[in-house]
Length: 222
Image 1 (cartoon, rainbow, N blue to C red):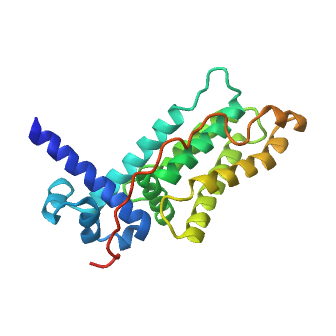
Image 2: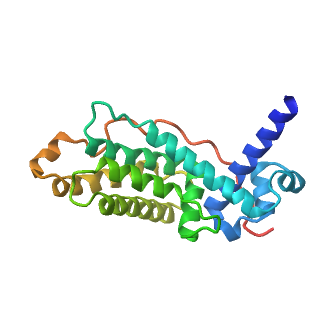
Image 3: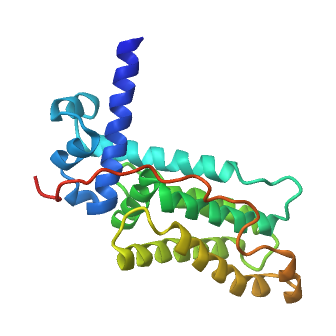
């Protein structure tokens, strides 16, 4: 049992280390040496758990989807207007993008590989489906959901480029997201004045979790 627990801890360290490296340097820049340094393991341990780099990348993508599924699943639905739930979902995703390196890595991989070789969907697909379901009854729920995901990812990328600091865009991202909803809600609702019934900033504190301190990584070469 102790050996299994150590193996699982090593596997988790590798996934988290790969996520941090991919978030900073992208798929190509995240060399095995950089990933091992971030995870604090040897290359032999990496190859034992993940014989090929793509095996590790698939694991990162899978964990990113699971993290988003958990975030979306935590958004209250009972007694909440569907459109408010959609607003809250976007803030839940913004929180993950701000603090979870695995989700950030999943987002970067989605940008770099629109159609990843393993044929699996990205976490963004899950968000689009959930938002479209919540937006049922609006003009074009699927198109609106897709646009929201594009806006969310675009804002996050822009903020990271401006700040040049990983894991720091959650607050500004949610601020921009709030202003976006303030613009969108009157256009989505049949009666624009009904926008006052909704909280563009989200109805729950989805950024309450803090980011995990991230060690300095070596450069992308190595």
